[in-house]
Length: 106
Image (cartoon, rainbow, N blue to C red):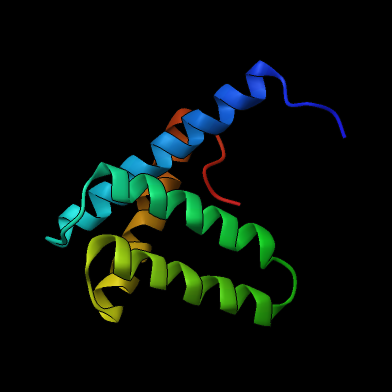
């Protein structure tokens, strides 16, 4: 395995920050608590969950539940609001991804 290049590190950090902003905007649209640091942590933990739990349907379902749990605790919301935040974030990420021409979603 090769060491990451500077470009790959900057690319990862850029995607991470943009994803965190998308998540923060989604959370603020639903009047939830939490700030940018919480969005950064939630974005990173969500990415890790989906990275390690990829594969079959059950693993994807487990990743989705972990993602909702991360959102619940990062923004101090219930299950329904966490689900709505994730849906809004997905739609916003799709729009930002198309606008910027970079893949924010798997």
